[in-house]
Length: 218
Picture 1 (cartoon, rainbow, N blue to C red):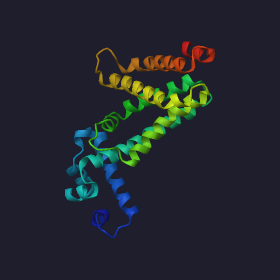
Picture 2: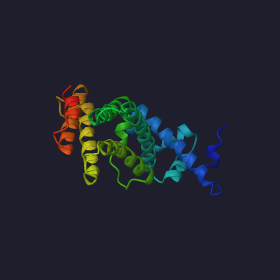
Picture 3: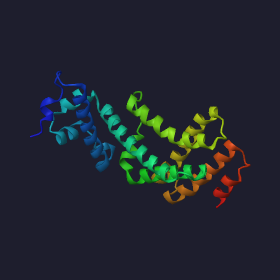
Picture 4: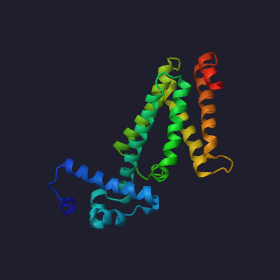
């Protein structure tokens, strides 16, 4: 018999136990999203899977958005690990190739984890909680690390450059995955992101870097 439902919500529980139970419920929420999309996430569905009452779900999270956000935090952690692995595999390559590798990994994650990725991007009506803000900072930090390693981009320009690159690559991936503008397909995204990264680095570092230019044109 699952003893978690009996313990859920008792004031005497430790914060650690509460966090573990919230994480378990967020995992269930993510599984529902992965299988049926965001519309499959309901308090009743989570309660049935966890063996709890619907009231217990709302007692743990307050509202359904808070539960979705915690599920999204798990997805963001998964995405970060995928991008970290991609960056590790491209160690020693040019900045262009490292950024292209990150973009390709992001596109692959969106394709393989489509429902979770879509839910992660759903609008929020409340500010990002610390766990989400931390994951976003970590994701942006991967791009920032590549730009910093070039040694040629002013530190003051890196934060906005990171945001611009992230937003641009995400936009391309989103259009490719949703067919939002008709002619853009997932097969177009790799060439589009390479063109974007090449042009961005030339602009940030100047067009006098033959190594980067040769990689981009190769």
